[in-house]
Amino acid sequence: MKTVLIAAAVSLVVALFGTPLYIRFLVHRAYGQFIRDDGPTTHHTKRGTPTMGGAVIIAAAVTAYAVAHVATWWAPTMSGALVLFLMTGLGFVGWLDDYIKISKQRSLGLRAGSKLAGQSAVAVVFAVLALQFKNSERLAPASTKVSFIRDTAVNLAFAGTVVGVVLFIIWAMIIIWGMSNGVNLTDGLDGLATGASVAVFGAYLLIGIWQSNNACSIKPGDQCYLVRDPRDLAVVAACMVGACFGFLWWNAFPAKIFMGDTGSLALGGALAGLAILTRTELLIVLLGGLFVLIASSVIIQVGYFKMTRKRVFKMAPLQHHFELVGWGEVTIVIRFWIIAGLFVGLGLGVFYAEWVVGTK
Image 1 (cartoon, rainbow, N blue to C red):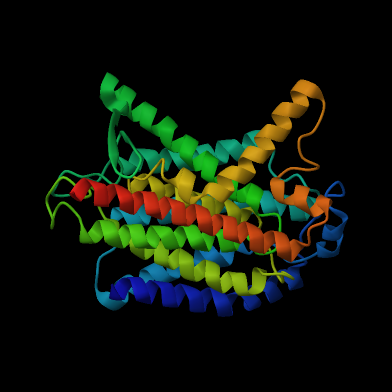
Image 2 (tube, one colour):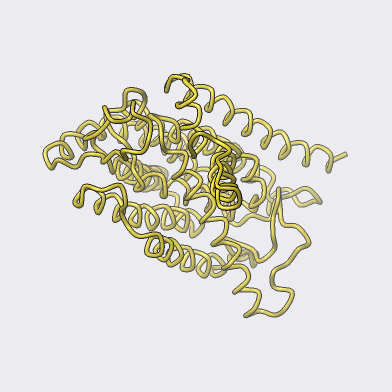
């Protein structure tokens, strides 16, 4: 537990005090946000606000993870390293996207195909490595079984080892694409994606600790959890909670810095990694319900427009619809945070209820 607390505290301090230093650096280099002309007119005042702030979140989380392990003389685990790799890798793809936008002064950074290829490459490496590195109990960081609250009976390796690995890679890519793009689409208002991410990472902090206390290695039984490194995954989640909280101080309305795709892709990747390695792949749909809702609004808008040439929403993603309806930005952010919290509460309730029912 000491490692978890140190991780959260260090990441909070690094992000809180490192962000203003990074803002000065970005201002000096004139790395400001480009604003689309077809978006809400209220966003035009944000033109030039420093972006690529997600680099601070990544740096704070990685630094805190290292410091926490050194301070407690506890060796890092492959599970923790894999989540940090996925976060950092996707963050680099997002950084390239942000840099092109800034240097070219346009709303389009990497082309859709290039961006997807970058995300896919990082996801494939993560997925392949996640099936390696079995511990003494023959547990790898990930499993080829589809999971909800724990592994289900649906095994992607049913057709053979090679086919199973390929199917798992595809499944992992879908989760990683979904979460990274979901957070990316949510990051449209000051503090919205950062605050919502805090809630979901907080849920994974609790899940990791709970799974660690009820691991099959120490509490064998029908309801124990077959997760390779749950305590270290809780440490990673604590790093992310602290880093997001520290960054939110400067990212809240009126934002002094934006996380950019550097941050949104990184946060989505970290959430996907935690979902896969804690064996809660389908539960992330509930825990990250706000991200799913906002991503769905874009899918609905695009699909309906292609079929009918009409729009369901005034603008997608969903938060911009409410801006055009007349809601204030702060009102939207707070209400969406509430929705995110309700989804997290529902997800944690389902997670705990499954354990309670199973122990009766």
